Image (cartoon, rainbow, N blue to C red; front, side):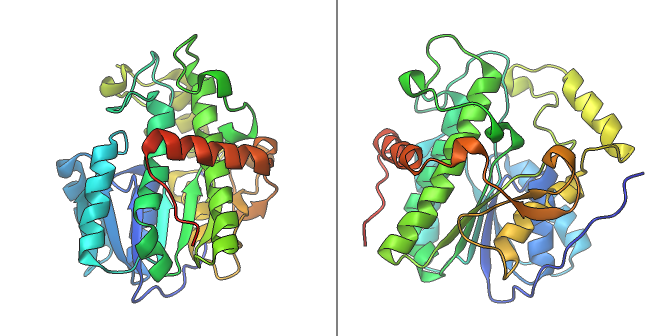
Length: 313
């Protein structure tokens, strides 16, 4: 059996946090830990019934948990705008935003409601638009924004000539691109916040490899059965061999988002072999994330595609 790994989450009383992808897996675990630390946690979900079930699970673990369910489909910019408008109308500052939701390697190319390749549109552009729309609340809360990327971001590149994968589709390469783009955005957000005095701290996290639903059966993605990969991951994880668990995989994002010592512009992930499992720690940025020029280019492309612009001041 895998050994228990944990960290201390500081008191978050009076904080308002938003966690995407909080209806299952690591996102659910992250939301529960934030609620247990006293934060009010906004859980934007695509499936209301699944969201209610997730909230009930957290409340069973954390009696009195302050949870707010909202509707969000990151693959629709209309949905992103609707959520942002609701929160802006409420007018309450946000202190934490953990962008954890994502999709992975549909067997065939799919597109979002706005015509973007599904992984690029959901994993990156949806989060980019959400942060941009919520910027006034994030600035007011002097928020920490943590972007959940992946070990897949340590290799690959942005397909600048065909970011929408309208030519030859490769699901794994498209997934890597989406996580590289999302990571470059998180790093550029830190640079621009520092340059323009936004007061936001932005960093990155990744969970290593753990048995989540990303590679499980997802009929809506055209995957009718669990992949061989997820079956192997489950078998290794339960035996404590090399990989992490859902619980340990949630810890790097919690460290990045809540540890007072965590830094803007840094990457947090498991310390084990290949960064696949183990206790959370800071480690070097993956090579595809190191170019500030690429980060600026991703930012400008994302503004153009989403129609969401960040003010300079």
